[in-house]
Length: 403
Image 1 (cartoon, rainbow, N blue to C red):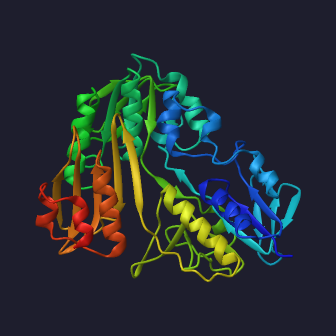
Image 2: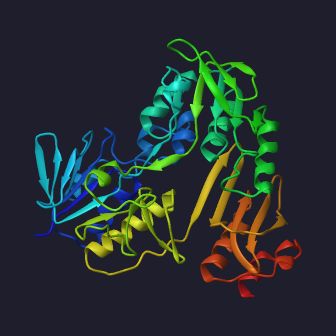
Image 3: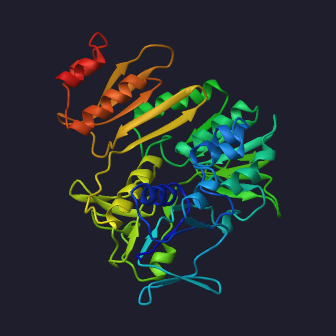
């Protein structure tokens, strides 16, 4: 009987094993996770969980009993040390587990500050897993001074939580503006103003020179020569695909573990899904770091293990919660040459529509769920309404779907 071993017990791995069982797969299924907790949601870690508004058990993707009840051998707190591709086995310490199909859903790892500038000092944190957030949570006390390095979504979300808890927040972004890599200047302007209204000191075009302190961080010197006294630091300078195990196994790496349209790696018995995998898209290759991609790609690989032969077609969408603003993003804005602004209903409601020539690429919607849903459906259908019509608040959004 065919067996499946999945390395990585995050969103992609959990979705994959659940889909296998729901689709009727009857062979042995093993899900191996390096963390001691069962598979859990990551997005609330830096928001509701850190704020104390969500209990640990509510983070879990499924009750822990789900895995045993469905015949899934869940191995927690275990790290796979090696993959024997010839023997089709994985090694965990002294234990060896055989597989017919192996799936890598190893996710990603946060980029850290180098030790040469104080990245190894106590009080310097990243925001990636449960242990990270549990370690920093006690420091979120009113009046504490936190430096956030990086003006992407992770950094801005951490800044919002810290400001809501009454901390003094300074955020530095080495690029000319926050969100420069992922969003238009209009979206950057929106969130800069939002954070300024909540007392966050955002410094753009300013990098970190070095952290100050002996064993524990006490301050920071910035690239403009200024110095800050800080109680702790949060680093949000991006993530990298977790490919080390794949590399050691000799699999092809291409901005992540390279897979074909079905999710299969350069070894026909090994698959990959989620943050760690790069896949064909629009004549090129991309790697997506999002919950929807992890779920959809994990389920697609599960189908293909069972012989479906289904190509993975990504429908990118993302979100971010900051203060009382929900940002929802549909599509990928790569290569845009025009932004169309559509005023929304209610305070702080607006959407920005990205075009390349006549083609609609993506939508950023702030407190505008209708604009997000309509934009998402248009992009998925390959429809591009006239920009002047989109910009007219007198035009009903739903009418764009009929165009």
